[in-house]
Length: 444
Image (tube, rainbow, N blue to C red; front, side, top):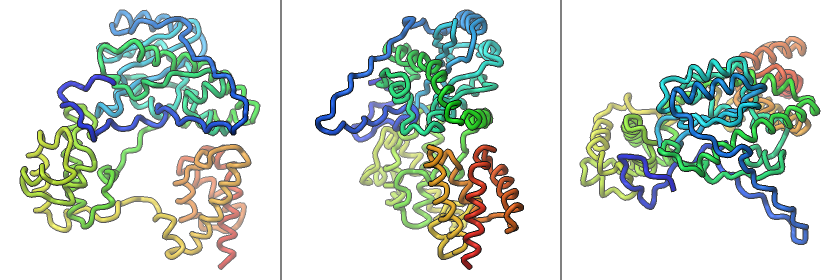
């Protein structure tokens, strides 16, 4: 168990750290084989080829690493470790790199003056990442940005592999097992334990070999150009900034009335401000369940708040005055100041309401969705990688006005491109979507 972050009281029994992010989480075990089936020999455990390197935590050490990486050849494997579930920030606490001819380097960015020399050393080099959308933001934060990349998770999706976690890919593609027991560790811990460092170094050790195998398979299946477009699209990736993020509080849907919703919003915002100031993940200050409990009961003073069933957490008593003040502000709000029951959005309504509101749109959507499922099966792709579901909903809710087939196809391609669909996606799906639009109109 990692050390408790400083200045935080011991965790109570009914609180646990947030779950690790999907790409880093250990995957569920495979279902057992049928009785009588011969047992497959266990895959050999992956071990470090070159031993565990020293951590680079000085500017002089970084200069040595940069010289070695710049002199090496081929793409560079990169990974970053964050402290998800422990810290508010998404900062990188360890950066791992490996390149043919340079070996593996473990860089601690916290004590370093700048990582600009590393960005310069990697200029023009293809970066290999796994689940790039998780690492690109924290790498960009320290000044590291690729000009080209290869994402092994996304490549696995394009190849139709059923499970694309790194450990599973290594076992499926390379025939070896990986240690994944430290995926949810608190990487802000210093010094970092040796077993954690070995785990981190192994993550980049496999990426070079994985890329080689996947490039071959993408070429064989005719999906290399799809991958190229997807990887180029990732270079501009920015995390989604959620409007009204407080609505994602677990259990908030159970609240009745706009004032209770206002209380949840006020408590969430107060908790978020404390978490940001202390760089602690919000759930370690006050769990979502406590926010919902207080928003339901609307206690008027500290004593009533702390005796509210379900109101608990490390910061429940410590920041009681803050919680009481937030609830008091909500009691004084006018109706116009309270949040609406339904979240505001810029997209179409949920498809479950279309049959009653817009029957033609409902027919379009159902026909298009069926076509997407069929196409995804034919091309061995997850349907969400064939076309982003939100793009499909938007197009079927508000398709182009023309119904002349050639003009409609051109307009559909343009509309998909405006949403962000890649050319390979538009090429595959346009015919089916045009068919769904025309068929739905013909039923009137």
